[in-house]
Image 1 (tube, rainbow, N blue to C red):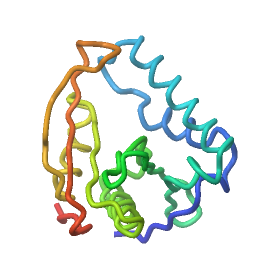
Image 2: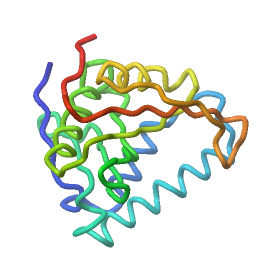
Image 3: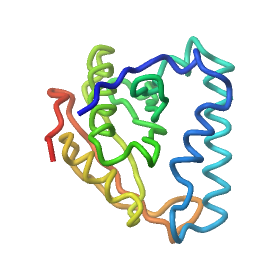
Length: 173
C-alpha cells in the first residue's frame, strides 16, 4: 500500500474540492439530473465555505496526496459533537481499489478521536455506484443503521452508517 500524506484544505486553490468531487462522481450511471445539479450546488457551496472560512470550516478536513498527486479529500462536520458527521469525501477514480479510501478514513477517524469525538456517522448512496464505499465503511468498523430516501429525490435511496470511535483500524479486504 502506498503511503499517503494529508494536507490542510485551505492551503489549496479555491475550486480544488469542487474539481475533485466532479471528477469522482463523473460517469455515475442512472442518476437523476436534478440530483446531480443539487450535488454540484452543494460541492460549490462547500468549496466556497472552506476558502472563505479557513479557520473554521477549512479545519474540518484535508486533501489526500500520493506523492505529489492530489488523489482525494475528506471532511467532517463537528457541530454535533461528540458525534462527527463525515461529510464530502472521495478518492479519484484512477487511484481507487488500492486501499487509499481506507487509509483516508483511518486518518479522518484518528483526527476525530484526537478532537474528542466519540462517534462518527456517514451517509452514502444506496446505489450500485456506491457499493465500494459501503464496503469500505463496513471494513472500517461502521455499522449500517438505516436506509432512507433523499429529501430532494425520493427515488434516490441513502444508507447511513455509524461507528464508535474506540478503534480507528480498518480491516484489510
